Image (cartoon, rainbow, N blue to C red; front, side, top):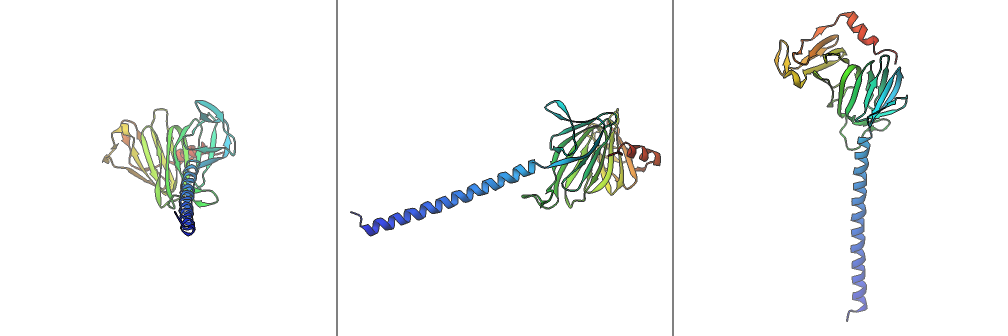
Amino acid sequence: MMSAAAFIRDEHTMMRTMTTTMTHVMRDAALIAAMTMVALAARAQACEVAALAGDATRVVAGQAQPLRIGDKVGEGAQLRTGDNGRVRLRCPDGSSLVVGDRSQLTLTRLNLGTDAGTGVMPGYAEGARDVSLLLERGLLGQKVTPSGSGKWEVRTPSAVTAVRGTEFLVEVGDNEQTSVHVQSGQVAVLPGPRAAGRTRGLGAQLPVVVDRAGGTDCEVSQGCTSATTWPADRVRAALDRLSGV
């Protein structure tokens, strides 16, 4: 028969074991909850509609809904503007976008790496940005906050642009030709996949590097031209289409 002392000792041992187990369970639960919050926060990143004019909508489940100032626009959103439509988006990392008239833009990926008011998003290295935009038609102006790492790209039917921090515009015409002009910084432009990686005059698979005041034009079948300085009236016409917001 177990003595009273042995019984008490075994009971204390059991209690310590249960306490240790509960501590581990609570710690693991807290860790899982924290990881879940980080994942949700990353997915919840969004840019805000700071200004708009004319006809501007967001497509949700195939239905167009009017945009309003203050709306949050996150990953996967598709924006459309009419003949006189303009939308300015302000993002948590300080970058801004202006969607011009007669445009269609999809925010394919929107990991900005930061959160407004709190600095770096939990779980992300500082400046670790992963943004991919799809401009199917129209005009898009961008002022991208400099980032030491990560990427910011714009894809069109005939080109892919990549930047770290700069101010530039991308236009897709009715024939799917892409035009890129840089106001500040530097942009690398690659032909789209249907152009078989061709860059006119530069050989296969070479990006066109466009510096301040320069531009390039890319066609689906012919690739991209070498960077050249755009005439002032062409630049002014494009910027006028982005004004008013």
